[in-house]
Length: 159
Image (cartoon, rainbow, N blue to C red; front, side, top):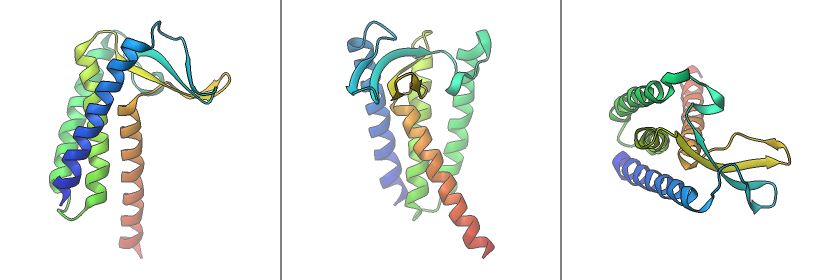
């Protein structure tokens, strides 16, 4: 049961991330020029991020450091997947989203020294969230789902 959710979700999110990033690189030039999608609320703006989320940086070691970190996280996610009960569809879904996101951004780090391709730009006027991509959305949604499942599990165990 878990494999029927995990693998298709992983492939779909990874491929969607890969394709949208290549489209962004082709159609959103030049960099840092916003293209309105839904007024000022959602824009597509091509940017390359050599660092991690929210500007976390390792200086000149960011590319190698974050690639290595992603590889270690992928191993941990693999262990978590193997330990997940066969019937636990929601954990399998959450793990697949995080795994696809980690793989998507790792692919960018390995393909180019420019960094991870980001292009989804959300906000109002000058109050903008960090520019992100489909992989980032997968990691975020998967992590939130894992946290909710963890809270649900701790309430069941503690009650």
